[in-house]
Length: 282
Image 1 (cartoon, one colour):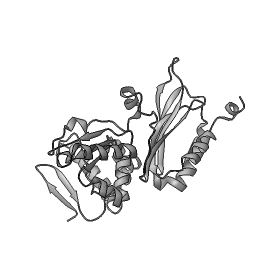
Image 2 (cartoon, one colour):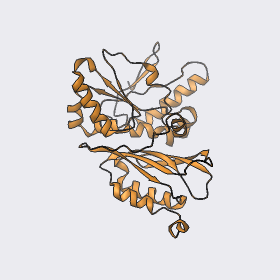
Image 3 (cartoon, helix red, strand yellow):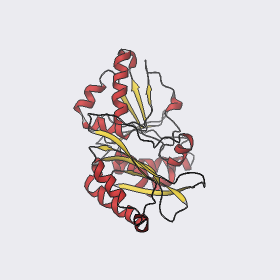
Image 4 (cartoon, helix red, strand yellow):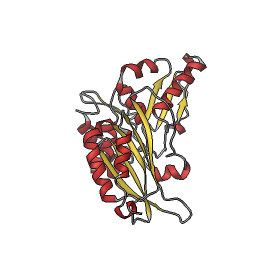
């Protein structure tokens, strides 16, 4: 059976393939079915939690919420939470690049089994995780205890809301790292040309899209009085209109890139090349 359903807990198990490739179509179908059953009153639920295997690529799952119209109309992707085993996490990160990608992709990182390691070991792996993804809060969990409020209603894909609560979210964080997955921030106070920017990202994702796990930020576009909220997952990217710029604030583009061995200098140069022509001549 493709699906095993427990009516009491309303759990749907997909077990005939990898959720990030062969089963993705079934994920769309199941989400659509759940939405319809909720609409008719057959089911009553507030959230859907999707749990992947430890070595799954989270990107295709996240992309599903943006590329499929039915899913997009019925669901809002809240956050991606990655659980890291405090005792075995370092070995898993060393051996599996998929584990590194899950850390880089996360909006929240839950460090579990901290009761099984020393405080120094817990701090060491916490530091490593922070180097790989400087903007995902890391929460410790011992004996399986977790405050569920830390994992729900995060609204991580609503960047405008995040910046309202956490104004420094897009600030750069300097650090050294040895892992393939790392992050950096591009900043510019010079307005960017929307057409050039779209052309640049359309080109760069063709070459490096597989390595670009997450990229998100605020755009200062020439001739636009509102900030644009920009985010992408691998080769899929887009922007929405955000709040108007205030008269007393600096109009600045800030984009966080999280990826695997990304060419920082090339990306920075490409974005600098998106400056509006008349701005370059000033």
